[in-house]
Length: 100
Image (cartoon, rainbow, N blue to C red; front, side, top):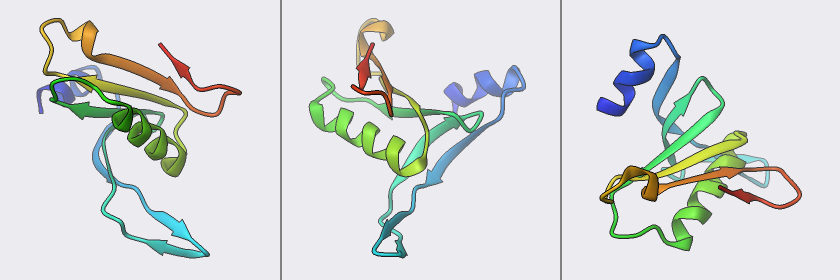
């Protein structure tokens, strides 16, 4: 809720817990996937509080980006001493995915 307060204060539109449908052979399936926060319909924020970010977390972020049609994703792990050490940015759809 605190993280969502910041864009709200600034008048930036955002949505929380966005369902991500999966289409398989022409049928939309409800697999229970949900994007944590989408800022202005363009940036996906995936929130974690884990000991360390693992490759599976990156794979989840990339899958959500692809399924949701977003290009930019931030993976944020709040279980770190310094927040900048818990951030990963991914850009989907380039020749190679970019990790910054």
